[in-house]
Image 1 (cartoon, helix red, strand yellow):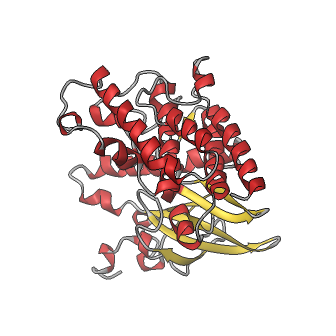
Image 2: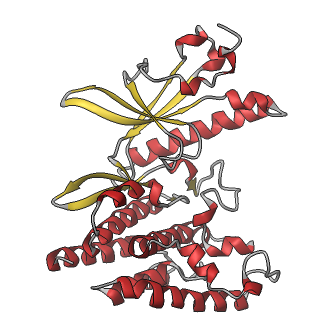
Image 3: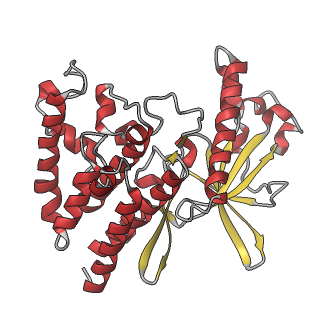
Length: 356
C-alpha cells in the first residue's frame, strides 16, 4: 500500500464492491447533504433476491478520523459505540414491527482491496430499506401537492412516532430529510421515518445524557432557553410531538416552526438575550407567537379542514412541554401520538374523498 493510500478514508472506496456476508453490491455513492445522515458515507446497493433485484441504502462508517483526535483510543471507542448503537436501534425497530420506520436489513463489514486486509481500515456498513428519496426531493417533483397528500405524509410520520413511543423509543431528529418516500399506495403518498441513529431509549443509550441529540434547527423551543424537562414523556416524547408539528407547518407553508416562533418574539425575549430561564414570561410570549404563526401563517393556506389542522398544530407545538400532544391524552398523562395519528388518518381519508 502506498503512503498516499494510507490517508484515504476507506469508507469512500466502496463503489463497485460487494459486501461479503450479505452480498449487497455497492452501486452508487450519494453526495453529502443529500441524505439526513449525521455521519458516515451513504451509498445505494443492490443484490439478486427471490423476486428479482433488491435495492438498499447503505451507511458506511470508518474510524480513520479517530486517529486524528488528541485521545485516539477514546475517540475510536466512541465511534464504534455510536455505529453499533445505530445498528442495534434500527434492528430493534424492525424486529418490533414498527412498519412506518425504515426497515433494517442488518449490517456487514468490508476492507477495501487497496488496504490489503488491514483490519484497522475495516468499514462498518449498516443496511436499510431504500426509498425513492426524502421529502425534500419529493416536494420538488409533486406539482401543487394537495391537502390530502400533505395529510397522508403527516399521518405516516405520526404513526411511525407512535410506534416508537409504544416501545419507549423517541426519534429526536424528525425533519424533512429524514422522511423517506416510497412508491404511492392507492394514489396516496407512502412515507416512512428514517435515520434512527439519534434516537434515545428510555432504558438508556449514548445520547440520553445530551440536552438535544438531533439537529438543533428542529429542536423544541424550550431547549433554546436551557430548559430540559425531567419526565421522559415531557422531555422526549413531547419533543418528538413538537417536530411533527413543525413538519406540518413546513408542509403547508414552507416555513420552519422554530424559526417562525422565535422571529415573532421581541428581541429582548429571544434566546441569548433572555437570562431568566424558561419562565412564565417566555411561555406567555411564545404562546402569543404560536397564535400568530397558526392564524396568520398557517390558516390562510388551508382550503379545507382548517380548524382541525390548526387545532392539531396548536397541540403539537405548545410552548409548554407538559401540555404538548393530544389534549385528551394529556389529561391522562400521555402525549398521545397514537391519537394524533388517528386524527390525521381520518382527515387524510376525508380530504381524499373530497379531492382537496
